[in-house]
Structures are given as C-alpha cells and as structure tokens.
Length: 326
Image (spheres, helix red, strand yellow):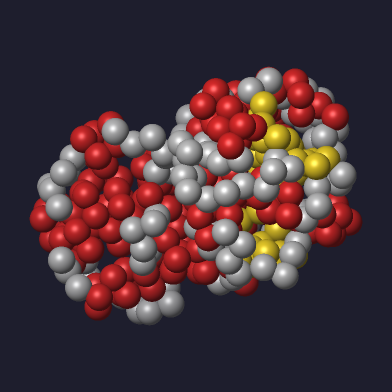
C-alpha cells in the first residue's frame, strides 16, 4: 500500500485522503467537481465540502478516473446510489476496494459489497465503517472504526496501511454486519432529528435510539449479520453519534421534517447527500418482503413521502407494547 486512491471528493472522502496521507501513503483523490480538484492542488483545501481545514500537501487531486489505475488500494467514498456507475468506469479489477460509503442500493436493494462484486467481479473487497464525522477525522481527532474483510490477510494489510494512534481500526470478517449498521443508522438518525424538530424531548430520543437499535438488530440478523458486529462501532457506535448531533446530515434532515417542512423542500438545496433518505424506502421494502417488523423505519419512509408528522407519531405511539428484546 504505497499508493492509495480515494474515489470521491466529498467531506468524508477528503477526510480519508487526509488519513492516508498522514499514514505516509502517496495519496491521490479523484473528485467529480473541478473546484475540488483545483482547490486541493492549489491551496490544499476542499473549500466546497470541508472548508477551513488545511489538508496535507502530499494529497494530490484529479478529475481523471484512469489515473487511479496504478494505485495499490482504492477507498471508495462515492454516494451509495452512484457507486455502481463509478466502479463500472474504474480501471482494473484486481485492486482491493475499501468501501467507505453507507447505504443500500435503492434500485436493486443490494448491499454495497454486492454492488462492488457485480461491478467488478473478483476484486478484493473490504468495508470501513464506524462513528465518524468527517471534519473531526480530517483534524486528526481520535476516532475508531471497523474494517471488515472476509479475507483476514487482506484486512490486516489494509489496516496496517491506514491505522494511526488517532485513527484506530478494529478488525472484523462480518462484511454484511458492518454495512447494515451503517445503512440503518442513517434512517434512524432522521427519526431522531424529527424528535428534536418536534420538541418531543430527550426521553423520547433515548427510547427511539434503543428501539431503533432493536430494529437494526432484527434486520441485520435476518440478513446474516452477527449481533456483536451490530453492537459495535459500525452499528451502535455510529447510531449514537448520528442520532445526537446536527453535524449529521440525516439528523438535520429529520429536524426539518419535525418542524413541518417537506422532504422535497429540505433536499432541494443540499449539496451533500443525506443517504438515509434513499435508504429508508428500500429498507422498508426489504423488511416487508422478509416479514421483519421495523415500525420506526416505516415511519421515516412515510415522512419522506410527505405524510403528516402528527399522524405518523400517533400511529407509532399507539402501537401495542411488546416484550423488550424482541
């Protein structure tokens, strides 16, 4: 891992480029936006997505995807719904791909490692996920993540190439579990934002996090994930972070919904993507197909389709009590 490519020039991709450069890797960041490429190369800053944070001068940016061909590993940080198209354009299929986006492909209902396998069969794949706000990672603040790879030797090589004292990487071979935690928490973060926007209080938010985690666990186990993965950094850890801060795009979207604004209105001016808005409908669909009870996810899906907040809350609160842990 002498040379690392980061595919995606948003805030998270830029933060990961910072991590790779600080780890001593020759780092190339591919970005779609020419402003991002020019800003990184000329002033060492991503003024569009991560303003005010100086970047390591060793990071080089490009708008030409073919330039990543001679890199030893690719950190894929495109929005989940665009990952397939980008990977199908990318050169070579033998380079390890570390999938760093969070979501489920809306059209086919596939996890992202499945998307990557179809876009480039045979390519080694790992998943990086956990509680990570990009601006904190880029500043070098202490962070811990999960890196999941079925091939444990691949995972060990990738961890060795990126890990630092302030960027701790924990090993796992549960790829599906790492992905499901990151995808479901985005939807639950929207729900917690609704609680905040509606002024329902801290008790309600805490209850929602706990019951949301129960939904995440039910869905994850049904999809082949392990409970301990979902209770770790990529599941519960990420859930707690994104359900409690306006730095979360999904939480902020939920705050607006709770205040009575429409999803269309809230998402129209967003330069960055709230992945939970795309994940909620496919997650609700998959859960229904498999007979998995996910009332909070269903509620978020309804709100994104412009259902009235009061009606959705009334339906949730009038559900009959159930045994905890089920």
